[in-house]
Length: 128
Image (cartoon, rainbow, N blue to C red; front, side, top):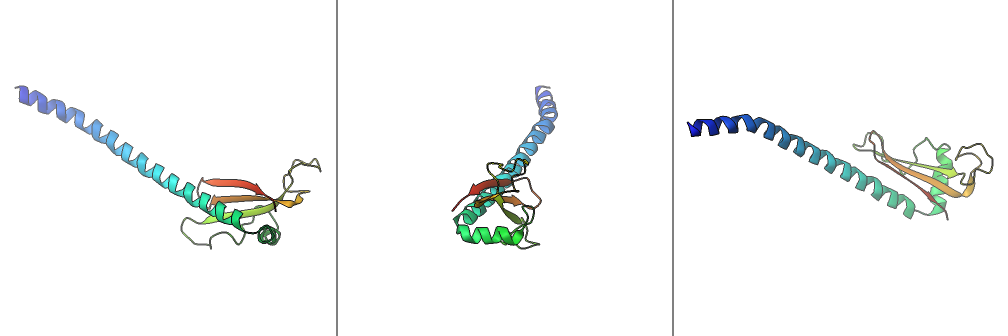
């Protein structure tokens, strides 16, 4: 009788325990993917910031708009594509319009690196 009760108790407790274990393993893999994306974005940001200011300035001018990805981005169709945006930045808002990209200082660049269809992104400002 005691063995039957013990087997019944284990049978009742096992499904919720397995569900909890399954949820924990899924959360761990999602966290691992998020960390990998963060490292990729951070690495690309370091690569971009290591480039000369003149090269970054030329890429920003070629893009012409802060919403247009620059040549520092991965090619279209690349899995996990990273997009790099560059634009001149208006730090002091001297023109008073509240737009950080109009009336921008020529020696200050805004840099944004983001996953194309993801949630991970980094922004920075650089100067010569």
